[in-house]
Amino acid sequence: MSNRNKIIMLILMLGTIGTPRIMKAQGIEFMHDLDSALAKAKIENKPVFVDFYTSWCAPCKEMAKDVFPLENVARFYNKQFINCKVQCDDKGVGVEKGKQYQIYAYPTLMYLDKNGNMIHSAAGSTTPEGFIELGKIALDPDQNMFSLIREWNAHNREYAFVTKYFKALQDAYRGEKLNSDFNTYFNELTPADKLTKNSFEIVKLVKPSPFTPSFEYIEANAKKYDKTVGSAVVDKYISDSYLWYLKNMINPETRKQYEIAKAKFKAKNYPYFDEFAMFLYAFEVQDSTGDINVNEYMKRGDAFLQKYGKNNDSYTLALTSLLGNCTGKPDQTVIGIKWMEDLLRRNPDPKYLSTYFYILVRNYHCDKAQEVANEMRANAIKNNESTKSVDAQIASIDAYRARLAKLAEKNKSK
Image 1 (cartoon, rainbow, N blue to C red):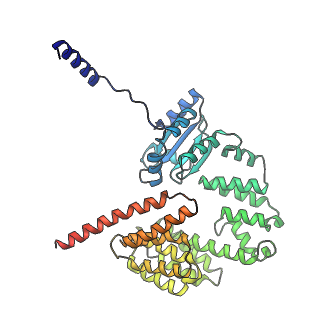
Image 2 (cartoon, one colour):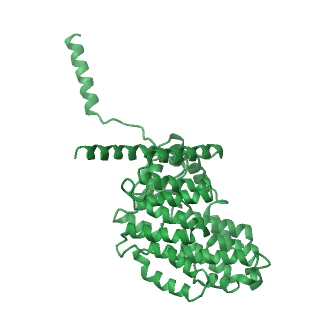
Image 3 (cartoon, one colour):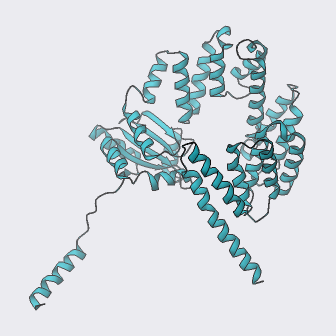
């Protein structure tokens, strides 16, 4: 190569190094300040899509990794929306924005008009196709949540619409509005209308909490539902409501309210109080910091299941799920495996396999966990369901095997 050509080549190389590379943007183009996004939306006359997320949320990370970067998703969202991400655990503006828009689940996928008013919302991760469809619904003034709210405000109280409306609020985790509008709906009903099957179906959908006026009305009139629903069905609804309401209150933040509610429940003299109290007693091992005495929990849980376990499959599932959360060592909580195997012998329901898998893998029973996961995957394929979740569970087994191998190696070296 001549000296002249060498000089030209050097100039070209230096030019390439010194010039910033212009990369074509990949995926959805997100802003990270909602106020700026809304200002841009006014200029461009577009709605705003907001991904409310947290740093610890696994489904949020799935969306960021598997959905937002896709070309067809980005093409649709970059054309139709100004897009913004708001981190709701940033200890700053993001936290305040989360409170402003009443965000209680992550991710919350929310759509705002250019003035910052919510026009549609959904909670949880979704597929790329589902995400695009969600955006299309948000853009449709005849389908989005804003249109449902408008129709509700116009006093549409037909059963089909009310069911659709309350379901949409529930799916979007708009709990405050759901409860407020349900109370309005229930209070507007005549005594005869409150006793209809349709009204009770809406009650079951919304699930008003025990000790609220609507719940207490149903409780006081349970026998009157005999002709329309069946008083036995209503009695079971009432008992289940108390059970899970109280169970979900056993945490440091609501422990005092739990004790008050439990005393009020006891005063009602239901025949199943002792059974429920023994179930709740297992969860009461949680101290004021949220720590759990695992050995005491296993002792109480096992005693309860031996006495009452056959009455309700959900008892075993709830006790085993929490036990799995408390497990971090090989064979630490094998009693939970026994609980699930006893349940599956009584009722081999495929939907119980996920909890069985969880307690197996948390105790490092990897080979058995692999068998169960393979069965779960085969069931999903048979039912034409996605295998994405179970595939992730199967992949997690390798991490447990690797940890188990390290522990074995460490024990050998001692």
